Amino acid sequence: MYDTPITASILQGALELEGTTAGILPHRLPAWARAQCADPQLAMVEAQPSGVRLRFRTAATVIELDALRTRRVYAGAPPQPDGVYDLMVDGKLAAQASIDGGNLLTVDMMAGTMRTDTGAPGTLRFDGLPAHVKDVEIWLPHNERTELVALRSDAPIVPAPDPGRKVWLHHGSSISHGSGAASPTGTWPALAASLAGVDLVNLGFGGSALLDPFAARTMRDTPADVVSIKIGINLVNLDLMRMRAFGPAVHGFLDTVREGHPHTPLLLVSPILCPIHEETPGPGALDMAALAEGRLRFRATGDPAERAAGKLTLVSIREELARIVRQRAAGDPHLYYLDGLALYSEADAVALPLPDALHPDAATHRLIGERFAGMVFGEGGAFGGN
Image: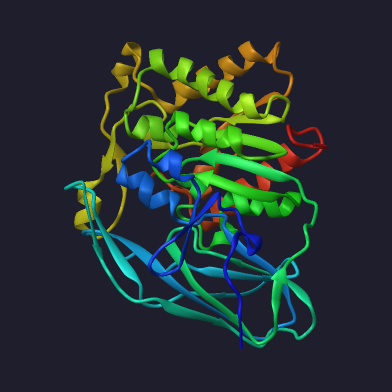
């Protein structure tokens, strides 16, 4: 077997690689950005490699990957499914598998605590692959922190040549991160990127799309041909700010991104439908009645009357984002707006309700990804022809 060092030359979608005692940990935020926020939620989700994939060329028929996963469970709720690795061969899904062992992160949302029980790395094995030279991608689990320990094969591995695709840089919440998707290539951004033929850099962070300045500076400094920002749901369910702060914060975020991408097509996307927060402010909370039945479900705890005092709802956020884009359009002809209800609406919720009242399921991720690809990357879309 051939041992191949895991380096940036064969890893895409990560902004930084950290050496750990186990191996290599891909990060989706650089160290300087991580140092500016002590939130354990952000630390957890940015190290979950949504959109990160090994990419190389090989004639190998057997490929093995040793990795140390950190699996997340919620106290009192059913276990989360194991993270899935998607094997792509010459652009087509060829196999899926999961890794055993690893660490266990227990999140107690009522107590606001996290506990980690340590474990050992596991091994992923793909065999029976075609013997000809091929381009291989191994998409890492979008919902498990993954430390890459070793990569082996029965033939040499070399970096795949640059396919010359455009780079799409996207930032959003857990919905963009992929919560509820069945596998890493099944998140809506990964689906949209595949349909559009672009390379994805996914800065979707569960619970953490909060107009943070370090996120804007990270986007500013990350090369991209097209850029999108999907914002809103986390601001409501964390009850983070009022309308007085929201508008200027959006302007500041866009100003910072524009410093590094002055003429790049830039799309601002408002929230998809989330019935519990359409007219009701946050904060969001666990539905304790559902949890008592072993189900994970969320609810809104605010008072709709508080919108008059500036509390944010999804309806008010959509109105303000549309207004901001109209205001800036005269001086920024490459700035676009997409109403999230065009991706998932009341009519869609009848056929495909949000299982936990907050996150889409696998079928809805596909619906959103297909619609985004057609509306945004298709002819006449914000990124069409770019």
